[in-house]
Structure formats: C-alpha cells, structure tokens
Image 1: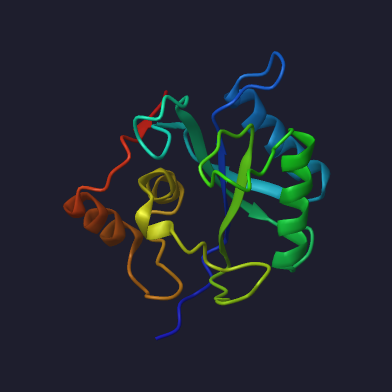
Image 2: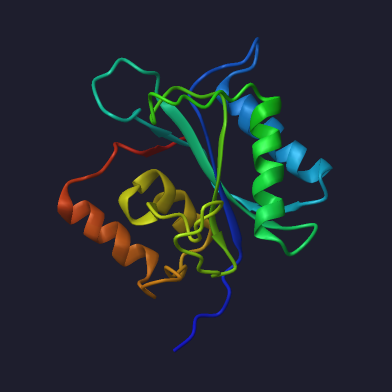
Length: 176
C-alpha cells in the first residue's frame, strides 16, 4: 500500500559556536535563512542534546532539532542546494578526513514527501541513516508521531524501539 506523503523534514545540528553565537542561535539563524529563501517552517521540534559521535573523543555535545517545512518550489535538489548555502554562510567546513568532525551547522533533508531516491550521486532520500539515529527519530516523532519510513513503511516509533532494543542509543535528551 503506497504511503501518503508525510511532509518535508530537515534535521538541524550544531556542536560549535560561531563568534558570539551558541549552537542554539545558529540553528535559529538557519531557520530564518530558510524563510528568507522562500521556504516556510511549519513545525519545529524541541531542541535535543546529543553526545558527539564517535563517543569518548572529547568533542562537544550536539544540539539537534527537526523542522517540517513547505518549500518555495518542489525540487529536492534545489532545497539541498539552499541548505548547503546556509551551511556555508554559517562557516560549515566539510572535513575530508573526519566524517564526524565538529560543525557549526549541519542541515540534512531527512524526508522529502516520501520520495525515494537511492544510489543517486547527489542526494539520497530518505536520509539513509534515519533508523540508526535517535537524535533524528526522537525530534521527528515529536512533530510527526505517525511518520513512516518511506522505503520500508515501518512506523518511526517501531524504528526507535528497534534502536532501543539494539542498545545503540546516543544519549539524546530533550531540552526545555
């Protein structure tokens, strides 16, 4: 049975400040920049604190959130490009040597209306590691409790339970 499009969800993350701005300020600025580009944030999750990965490397904790947006267009690649421009404006530096390097801003398209694109050199939808990340699933389920994975059709809460049972949680804590 085909899934109804669930919306467009972007994951936001930061574990470095930028000048006088703390990670929370950076995430809020990123949302403002999305608005300036014509996208509309319709829902924002709470902020969640998450231990940096891999563990025990002395990196600062991440601040994460998920937002649901309506886009200015209907093109996932255009949205990806806008997200990358926003990351660059926030001094995001992509490390070629360290996949888990500290970052001022990380914007990931988690789900784009249930579109599935795999083995694409530019964008993979949905985000390929949703089911492995409590810092994505917890805020996503906060704003979309009936979200289903577009590929498997599995409810997000089932994916989260499987992650809990595997013991691969990342000490994700909702902040007030």
